Length: 316
Image (cartoon, rainbow, N blue to C red; front, top):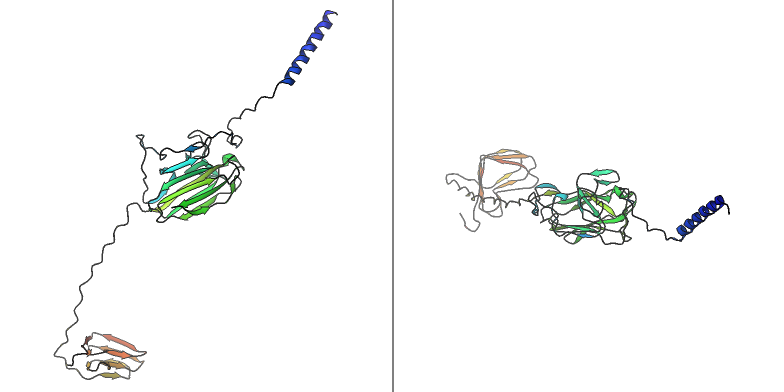
């Protein structure tokens, strides 16, 4: 065989060998793509990446755990320590989205285009428990899937206080607008925020508590009311013994009346008004064993006058 033909045959055989070898190889396992923050990487990979807090989630400048510091008025919940917390994928993030498995790897909180400076980024299934001590009036927050998962994901938000469910969002997905939680927590000791996977799976279940806050808190304690002093009883005026009384007065016409009238009969008033015309009694003294003045449909004014009740069981 000529040299040129032998060379061509060798190249052809080599190419055929490489082709056959390539066809006989098994395809390589797909490699995960880099996190693009567009939801392409937020699929459960079969490995447990859940997280349970082993502290209250906050440390002070010296590295020590912070105690709860609710102030009077409104308090952003993301700056308060929890008593317990769990998360389905990496740690719960404060004031940013859940991101991936690492700490502080999220983006700004965003629900359907609305940004939040404060709140929590979580991944279903998740829960957070806070101690209220009965000091706050309401819990308010927007809830929804974070924009980093696009229109995907499905979760349910729930709010409990002292074990009683106060809010249930129903199933929400990534295309839903935020819903607002606004519940009364007056007198409640414990607040628990729960996010479930809505019963399907945890793929893309990145959810946000946007702007979560406690309102109208009173942490200094309500001061004990100052008892109102009971005024000393005012003694009844003693009858003027120099006053000369006439018998009971019966008024049948309107006008102004001045004088001193008494009735020693408990069933008879000292003054009996039997007219609806305007009547004024002024500068007078009345005393009796029963009613001092009686009448129906009266138009009566009494001024600068004294009235004295007499014991009906003692005559005189």
